[in-house]
Image 1 (cartoon, rainbow over the protein chains, first blue to last red):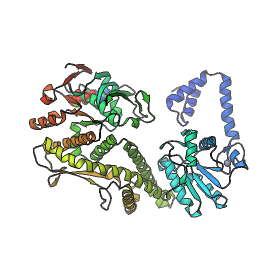
Image 2: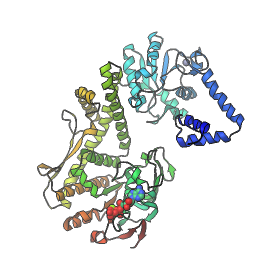
Image 3: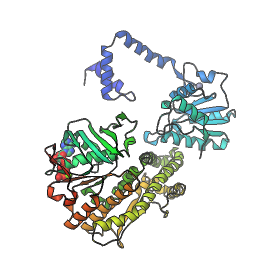
Image 4: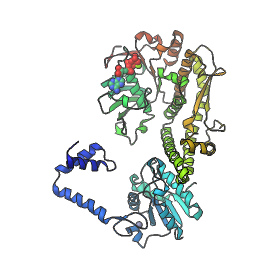
Amino acid sequence: MYEGAVQDLIDELGRLPGVGPKSAQRIAFYLLAADPVDVRRLVTALTEVKDKVRFCTVCGNVSEEDMCRVCRDPRRDLSVICVVEEPKDVVAIEKTREFRGRYHVLGGAISPIDGVGPDDLRIRELMARLADGDVTELILATDPNLEGEATATYLARLVKPLGLRVTRLASGLPVGGDLEYADEVTLGRAFEGRRAIDI
Amino acid sequence: MYVRQLSVTDFRSYDEASLDLEPGVTALVGPNGQGKTNLVEALGYLATLGSHRVALDAPLVRAGAERAVVRSVVVRDGRDTAVEVEISPGRANRAKLGGSPVPRPREILGALRTVLFAPEDLALVKGDPSDRRRFLDELLVARYPRFAGVRSDYDRVLKQRNALLKSAAAARRQGGSALRTLDVWDQHLADAGAALLAGRHDLVEGLRPLLDKAYTAVSRGGGPVGVSYKSSLPDDVAETADRELLAAALAAGLAAVRDQELDRGITLVGPHRDDLVLTLGELPAKGYASHGESWSVALALRLAAYDLLRGDGGEPVLILDDVFAELDDSRRTQLAEVVAPAEQVLVTAAVAADVPEALTGARFDVEGGRVTRVR
Ligand SMILES: Nc1ncnc2c1ncn2[C@@H]1O[C@H](COP(=O)(O)OP(=O)(O)OP(=O)(O)O)[C@@H](O)[C@H]1O
Ligand SMILES: [Mg+2]
Ligand SMILES: [Zn+2]
């Protein structure tokens, strides 16, 4: 245990995902020794992200305005929605330039171990978007791991009565992984080869 | 295949140890508690990513150290492959194959195959169903490494489903929404379970003819030994490897016990509740066979596993940890004759006299954490 402010910083850093107590300590002492200008830049970035960045009211992606860049773009195809777990997945898919529709960010995947059920995800919002009838295809691009598959199965069953074309990214993505770690070529190919989902 | 080199760092009682090995028989000899089993346990870990003695990794790391490393050079068809694993309890282990890190430790499975005989094997006959399931699954993975993924998928679905059942029990009282996803988890459990079940059924079928042969080789009559797979499904399911059929049977089984599952908050059917039934003559081995007979059945299971692995290429390294001390003279001789022709055999014994003559070969003395070649 360190005194006051140093320990507070270590505690706060240790709360971040993927940062254990040891790394928290290392980062804290790095910041202590760092140039004040660098630290101030980090502080500004942190404050701005909380002040300026919001979530898109349509798709749930991060955005600096009411609607994100994708949802504002008039050239995007309104008939297709690609469902992903996190905003970082939008970035990964955008890089492939394979997809011209819009997104829906769930904010995670169903995982009873973590206490995450359908009501904790932006599924009600998705159903509201599908209700107006513009959308004809739903691409389920949740992660290729168990929780992502379960979420996809759940959604496919849920929207079945709507009679949409529901597809899942083609296999070839590394199983058990995160969408964001798939390289662009693999992810692009997965998009092209998407298949109707079994339910 | 054979192991040309084995070295350990901070594994069990060793801070550092290294052995150069050869094909044929090698005996590790030394008084009790000197570290013989520790060495063969390290080799077994490289082959299975688990210990034959403990379920958790913590005891494998030398007291006071943070992580253990086990390295080996495996020779197969004249080609060397370096296999290495770093064991860090509580964190993700890391592994290397041919000097390069692999994304997941389980990717080294299959690079080294071992069949390990140990006093703990008596539990295969006398122990709980979990001991026998572990035997089946380890052998399945040794034969087809892709089953490591099947196993871990199944374990993960099971954990998720049990977590849901626990919270659903509460939700049912409050009329909540948790139940809506149970159907989805049922489907995933049935699919993953069917893949595992198909593998186990196929394995049992492969073991059956080899088991009785092996039993005859290490016992003096009293057979035949039978083996069958006992499913936890309410209705009998055929010992088939047809995954679709099995998935349907599992789904139906889950539906049949759903109310009970919600009451108890656990998954009541599936490969995690199954067993392997061993019989000797007309009677079950468990609860009926004598101590000596139980030993013979356990040895026969390991020998059958060896036969099976040898049959599909990549002859495994045989490890006999302290087994001869447990056997009478005639079975000692019989077992020695059966294993002597294997490509590589590692034997541990507290006294040299416990190693049968048929297994005379290289010898290391193990004492006080030092391993010295004496022959
Ligand atoms: N994590 C550990 N750290 C330090 N020492 C350990 C650790 N685990 C086991 N040991 C020590 O290793 C010794 C046991 O070694 P091992 O089981 O290899 O003995 P052995 O030579 O096979 O003996 P036996 O002939 O009785 O089977 C014990 O003395 C035990 O205290
Ligand atoms: Mg021992
Ligand atoms: Zn948007």
